[in-house]
Image (tube, rainbow, N blue to C red; front, side, top):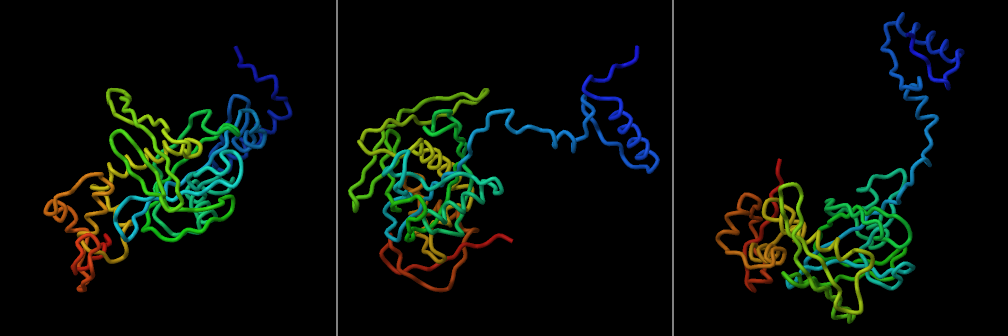
Length: 302
């Protein structure tokens, strides 16, 4: 029995398709693939209706982490929101991705617009997709971790203020605070075991203890970034983004200790980073050691 053509395909269209296919065969050109409706990819895309499915908005947020020249604490950069939702709340810098830019490009643009910072290390850490995470509409958020020695940030665009906050992260609490402006946000942490296939892993569920809190689900972004940094710092060179171009080994060790949340044995630490650094031939005062020490720089890999 002959195969029936779809009702939507008229005879004239079929004849044109036949003539075009025959001409391609004569020229030795590859035949265009067609779907069940007889459409080429070009025809399909021309008739495609992008409004057929609901489309969520997509944003980027940046967890900008740094260490200042006192080496006393890890810090994160927050902006105070100028408008609803969460007006006057502290939040991570970020915003909506444009139609003609990648998530990475959007992250760099938003960081520059809201804080004035450019050209810094950024790495994607997680995608946050909870349906109710943004009260405006369905918003999927792609979070980036950015690392930089603490430098002055200037609020811009929809940011009213931009300030560096200290971060204290323990097994049962997370505290984000800036004593100079009198802001403190504290969360209790409950450990919860999750399962992914046969693998079990532990994560934290935060509960705010203070009147002030981070906007949206940004405390979850912060937790994810802190855990990611701890997991990767010893096997990658990420930490070198948190020190100046030249540094002492005691100060570099302190950066690792701040990230890991624990002390590090001097001999073991130097064995691990030996091939990643090189001497400059100069000396400088170590902040943590409070004495002159050899200055080193990061050894770029060829």
